[in-house]
Length: 330
Image (spheres, rainbow, N blue to C red):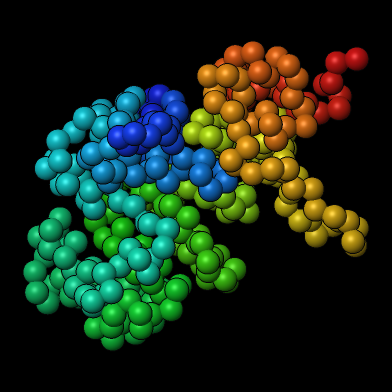
């Protein structure tokens, strides 16, 4: 049994006088202990909303959440707020996308780290302060005793992100959700933070749900990958299988739009045409059809289901998938 099992998760935003907006539309995946699972896609595909739904951080009004999200046999979506509050920080933790807006700007870093230790581990006073300094040192922040007294604006972007990671791992959570943890960081700091996350998974056996649009991060960290588009998973596969044989036109386009060092000089990039707004409702067909170079009229006749056209465990939501040349029918 998986540590986290998400089945048909849906999130719909409602407002009086406006049409309902479905951000997540029947997403299913699982994360085992010591495994890294990626949610990949463009901005607006439902990645972050999925993570907020799992953590119980969506607004109580104007949002309709459906499906199941079982963590160690308990449904997070129906859990009462008090119990969920006890689990957040201790068994579930999240690294948010923007550290500057996630940290309280008028409270020193030390106070923000120690309050987690006090709330979930019962540490007080000097013991909590020493443990907080140890956490900052563990994530690579130099001179941690001095940094505990500083405010978020006094830290660099990389240090702020490391402070968030320190807060997230303070209680050795069983599941860690990382929402774009390397956004806006230079490549050197990015590599260091990814190494920290990898060590956490290897040493502590933590289950990691990595949310990103950076396929380079996916290639270096994830075991399983779920590619999302317009709120639904369009391709799910192991990392090696996905990079070797991208089958959905969207996943194929994402990989094809990455600049290659071995490409001839002056060769133009091959981006996916259009934008995330160029889509149709899943009820009317494939949402990616307006941007797809492979679409046929069959793509507009109904909602495509997840199938396994290549191999067991490699699921694709497409009626006209991209197949290797050797597999293209004559």
